[in-house]
Image 1 (cartoon, rainbow, N blue to C red):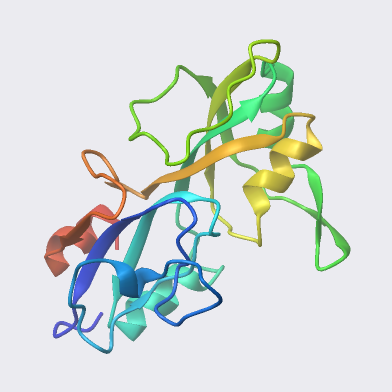
Image 2: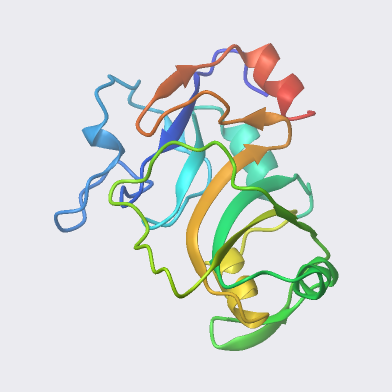
Length: 197
């Protein structure tokens, strides 16, 4: 990895694009109150309707290492789903389910999926619409891959549509204590240790 690089963690807010360039009227990383070095870019992306941990760096080697599927690294998401989630659905998610990627069937790799109590997350703005007649559940799911909208497609495939999706961790680097829009500058050695590299 490149020792002269910069490393930042962001808690990406809901509806913000994971990019600096403008696209319509949606907020972007350029709207964060922070003067990033010009060669810093996000590693991968989170969809606009997802929240949570996003790593930004100028380290091209680290970027390659984290995005190349052959270097499997663990990403953990906290997911609020519609309905009373079952252990059977978690077992299906863990074993892998068939979803559609670019119009073709794709069977997801084995994952770690379990029902959890509602995690202590920052409030989302706007909040999830509350409906008394329909219960919701929380799931923790850890993946080694990141296909387009994969987690949402996976929960839908087992009958539990995603309502809220938060990327909580990349390996042992977590969003613990962070608020939407918050930025942390990271020490390279600490980051690499957290990423188990």
